[in-house]
Image (tube, rainbow, N blue to C red; front, side, top):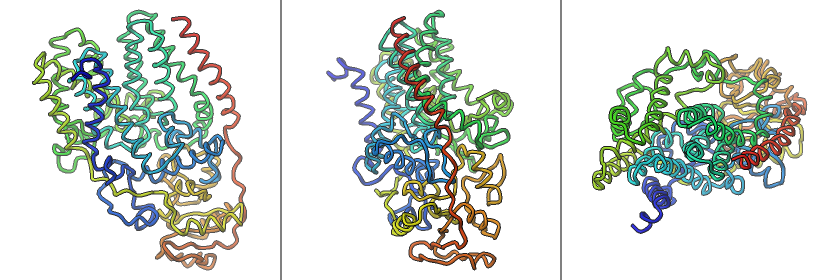
Length: 583
């Protein structure tokens, strides 16, 4: 209790840490892991994994296997060798790495993973990111005038809400976890001239700009801009806040400039008419999932849950902020409007159609990047708990307990048994040894064997591509004539399940020496004479006759990367120093 009275901020973070440990006890105890599995990496699991495969406890378990874990291994190896992870030569004909928002070549929150991307560090990173989200929300709630227990309620509601825990392994949480910290720094800066608040706002902006997800960044910065415009008292305060955010964005120019060049050349899945476009809406039946899985109607498409107790407290908080306002009410009115606006974009077709036609906003898939909605609901729940409890400490404790107990009970699971998704199967060494003796040759997987970016983790040049930001020159070579539909609906990666003579000729021209397949796959008769099986253990490997060595495409964007480093090194610190001097 002494810590609570003397250091309420520290006590709140410790309380949320204890709650997180209680929710994820099997992970903390080492019995389970947060590294999601995807059984499609190999027919029997990833690389010989023999443990249990429970139902996925996150929305997209494949994302870890397809992208994040192998990308992080590649980035870690580059940094530890003293090389800048600018280019990835192991997918397609070579693809930009630093400019790819999902590659995490330089994401500040992932520093420990650059040093050691082991399963234990991955678990600590995931839990640490959850605690960061909850702790910053708690700190923001305190700054907005909530008492300690209602502020803990708000932190718990965001930290353990479905938006965060169901997307636990997804890259956009690197941005969304810092959003309450950015709002906190901006709130402090809007209230008074503060060098510390200015520097913290710039730091939060910089971390978010390098966090990886441009779509999440757009959604979160819209809330931050609305916060500055509504909460700022006078033009000077708003200019200070905007200047601080600009400092962080300027410091991220080494990422933004090559990304802008790549974006101008790329195909993506978020164009007009796509299910992932800004104009796409979810069926209204999905709203039934918001209180929790227990409330979803039969056949409703899945959506994030907030918790029944959180939802009721948020509704009470929203009503009280408008009907019986107090000193803190204006901030919570803004949060309520932001949450309602995003709900409308996600579920109301006319609103989504209007937003989907706007520049930049049309590229945001609002149903996935919904941090403003769920952060607003979490803070409103804390506000509602505080207003309902008043000075009755026991009531505040019961409301906080109801929220925490329900969210811990709703926490998805179980998670997989501890495993190393990058433990190489024997065929990995077989391929590495042969390709080392035959430089310039490539491989290609048939079906889902060795998902494309897993090949990058083992430095195996795989011609298949993941769908994010595919360079158009590479697209023409690697997709035309292969088994991928044309834009705007690309398949996630080339599977080549239907092998024929035309596809085989394309692969030969790309230098593909080996085809990887499941053990029971048999080549069609039209191409069987060109393939000979040379490995037949856990998978089958086929040697392709008549292949020609292919050097790959030249690296793209290096000039803009250098320009970004120069501009970021000058503009970022320069703007920060100028802002501190002018405060």
